[in-house]
Length: 488
Image (cartoon, rainbow, N blue to C red; front, side):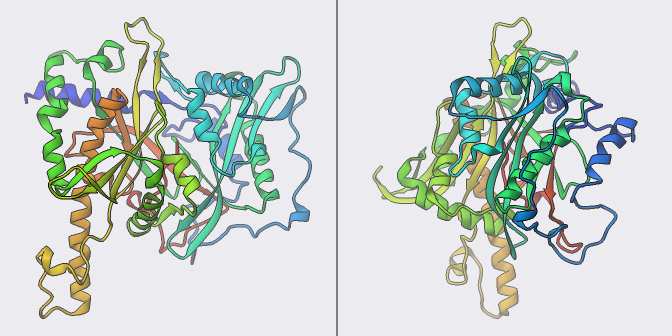
């Protein structure tokens, strides 16, 4: 590949990674943008966070734990946070088609914006129902702000209860905060802190005093920061829509050849062989949920230090059973040798969700289909003490410590290889079944095992993970690799 072609691909990756911005630069919202300097607006935004129970970067903590103690229920305010005159709180009923459409309209116009005003996230009703109605969801945690005059929805935030394990010894009930959004006309109104305070009050009423949230910007203080990676699947369409451009000195054909799946990495027969032969890959079904839940919990616990705990099949089924145009999940199923008859054993699972972007510019395409990597799992310990010899590890003369070390290293290598093969398969499935034009992920869990080999490009966007009222000890910090929680 020539230097010009390499530069063209680098420019394309930067375009894919830096396309969107969250909120205005002077917003006080948690997902407002960040600059390198401490502007007056940044200081103003941090004035709010300085009053909140969030970890401080300049403080050393002996061990993990809450920042503030739990509040006795009788001391939690029963009245909602006071809003400015002309606005009122509104509990959003996502079962009501009209109210669901209001959320859709608010998010589509205000939640994530394209810097060049060429693209806009396209949230479907099915996607929002999937995201906001997980088992056990609380309708009172879908909170809106309305104008008293025209009743228009001008702000929104949602909370979802989750069971989270942090650093092995801490298993916590937390609230996952998502979709915090204000109308553009309210960006400088200081209402984002009011949304945060109100969702906090409502979760306290249910006895939950910790929360987790993400943002594309740095606030006080992330416990880890993941970087976005992007894998083009349909370069021609990305160029046609203006999502990507071919820089001078290069050519579209060079980019097409570089990212062609079949020519470079994707061959079904080869992948089946890499997965061990006697297997088949198919969409996940309801009958697979119990096995997938067990394998997913086992994988997350072995391969990460901060991850959800899935206690019931209903929750796994909600998040992972396929929904057309929303979430796609596949299992690797064992089959009897020489036949296509399944043994009933699920060996692996991988999933992704779809969130397209509407094309606002004059284009022959109405949208760009974006796939986002979701949960996946493989056997985290293919090598055991009993099976180590069949994997080339001779235990003779090794101490228990040395043997465990050899087995651990072998398992890490085998898991990385299998995740890479599984992800290779997923790229083809995303293009074939979901018609994805680009595949996105961040560098968490075992994702670094495939991003380079599968020609993902490093974006310039970052995802910051935050705890609310929980801090990590100085010796138990979390890295990207430790994160096992996928957020929409």
